[in-house]
Image 1 (cartoon, rainbow, N blue to C red):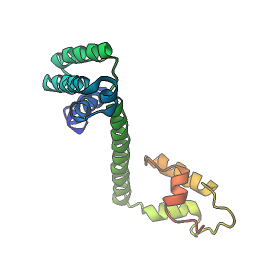
Image 2: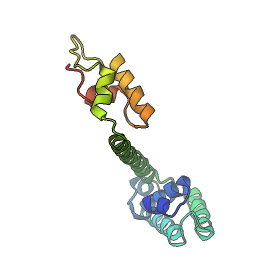
Image 3: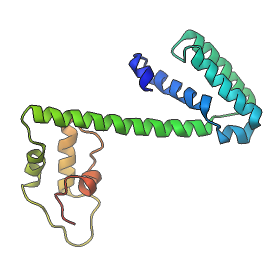
Image 4: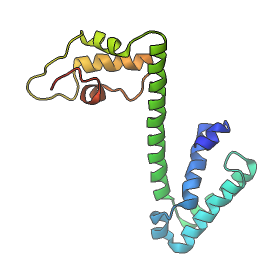
Length: 172
């Protein structure tokens, strides 16, 4: 996906070409189970043909994709294992991009003279809170910190994450 993004392709094409890359290399057990070795070879070679032709972002690649699509329909196949790996890839890519974004926001705060610790401790009232009893999944404080972080543009900072793994403002 990074390669296609660098070439300024729309995200849908980046993801589709990533799927085709997985299909071209993976010994997809779902395809193997449903169609055998011959079907697996057809799927892999068809996906490679689309990529060699320029990927889905090119007219030639789209022509090869239509041919692969017809072949998959004819054989009643779906690249289920490849689909699963694409989903995992997109998830990890999203997490990575969120981390990079968070690091840039953090550095931007530093450059602007905003101290991150002071920002968070200001929301917390400046002192740790000792919870008693059952450990909650989140608290009103973690909700407030989460909202403030999201307001700054941070991602993956839900109240549960803030509470359980965040700034250690709660001593549970």
